Image (tube, rainbow, N blue to C red; front, side, top):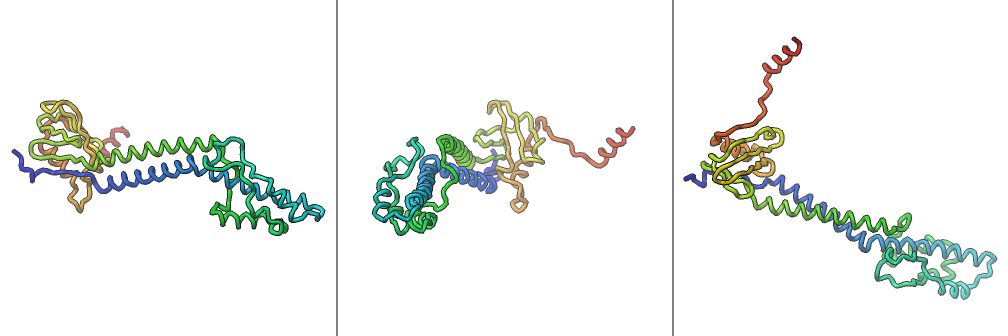
Length: 275
């Protein structure tokens, strides 16, 4: 019977948990942003665009009606009170709670404020007072553009859920090796006698190894990811390397690994090619 204190246990590394958490946060934030744009954001920006256009239009109207200098404050106010903001007929491009028709803003009814024909100043004052973005989009967002936000939202949400799944699943797992068996991330304990093939061809470059087993524990493959479990930090005595060292010391099956290229074999190869 093995002593539990002699076992090597490789838990998820801070490198993995940090990377998974960053991906979860990133895709989560993107999902929220695209949800806001698809549900209300772009529709509210459309309102800002058409309000901004209304200020330009009212300025042109005022200049046209006062071209001969005969426009009175009463006549302008009567005209302005009958006007409404020109929104598109497609209601889905606007916020659901927007009341239509929307009359011209009160500031555009003021004859004295309109007289200098400085509609930009009036817009800056109005947008600041109403908490609107003073810089409207270059053009209104159509249904296709709004629909694209929903598509990207669902993609980001799926990626965020995937990152959350792998993070939660992995942080509860570990790889364990003792004197009698190796236990994979899925919790299956496999005796060394059942291990048939140890594939180390990616161990040196990617920290990945695969062990095929067949016996009392069933038939399958153990995937050992040294970067995810244990790690290779020298200040921690390289847990993943120590784990692999213990497995290799108990392993009696076939080992697959790349033979190191020595200087002698390299020069011999060069001589053979030249011959």
